[in-house]
Image (cartoon, rainbow, N blue to C red):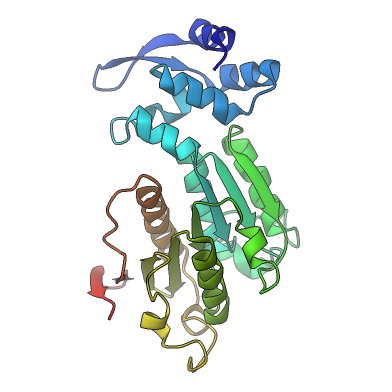
Length: 286
């Protein structure tokens, strides 16, 4: 990092206290954006430079002490692809942007319709029929301008899956059909990256993490060819906002754990939750 850039970050920083009284040096989002524009640098690179100098961008101050500055740098250096930007995907994308994942590829070929309003956090009465991917990118830009966003307003298919995931360290499954999940799993394995998968239906949801060497969806659905139906449980049970938000939060948490190389308790395991009776069960996949 150029010494003049680092000096400018230091001059723009100030002392502040955490709620527990711990003192730290911080820099505002406005200062980061201004310096990044002046230096013709991505905002995330400016934030990384600050963190390496023990200056905490104020937008991440409440991530501490749960995350270290080194963890925050690792997140800013990470690239995640979110596939499907409905109820799960829209919420996951925003959670990842807020915690500071530096690069997001957002993939969805659909637009919003009125039935999405009950649980898709990005949908409003004013943006019906607009692209989910482009709306998500605008939202991320408003939430965290330091995040680099690529909006891919197209459906993932056999001929474009590999290209859409290029550069990502983790893929996130927020899809609604079994065949699409198998396609995403195949592309993720070809790229050698982990896949965090979630699904919801009514009061229930499920979550698992698949690494390239794992059997993955075969252990949940059987072979793709033998799957009796292609639609997920949501087609029969509907989608409730609180179930979607709960499962999306768990999915975002798992993505962060994978990015930070924390041991995954969901690799080759399936977490099943039911908010009707508040049960959480983790089963081994064999």
